Image (cartoon, rainbow, N blue to C red; front, top):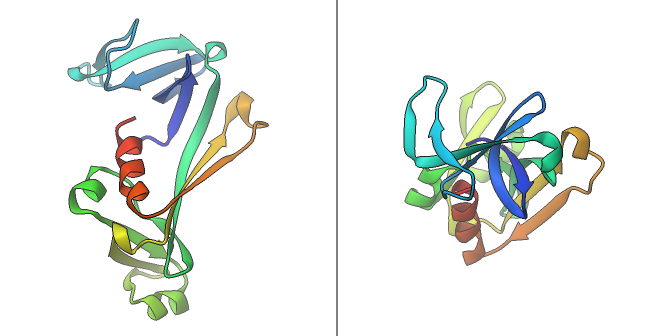
Length: 159
């Protein structure tokens, strides 16, 4: 999943940025969008794209995540469709004592992972950090609990 997004005409889009050009990507055919072409020139009829100048977007931000599991903070390995499909997320830590305490498995030196069910999470946290010329804007942190977690993840992966 791309972790960069832009707000354009009050709507959020996944983006690729190249110099002064922002490529907005969407699963919806919004006004002015055309079929998405990947780097190999393949046309995708299930995705749409639109090139705009950077100064026409309202915000560009990087999206990251954190979770709270059994009162401790952990980063998810990734947030993607398989998280929703299997209702599980892989958490990781580099702290061996914390890993041992919560039953994480060692994957390599200083990398410990554990797969947990979404409903075992205390919280899921979304962190929107403004970047580029927007870096002075406020970081937005949203916390989700219970059934909000899976719905939030669905919304995120469908951007």
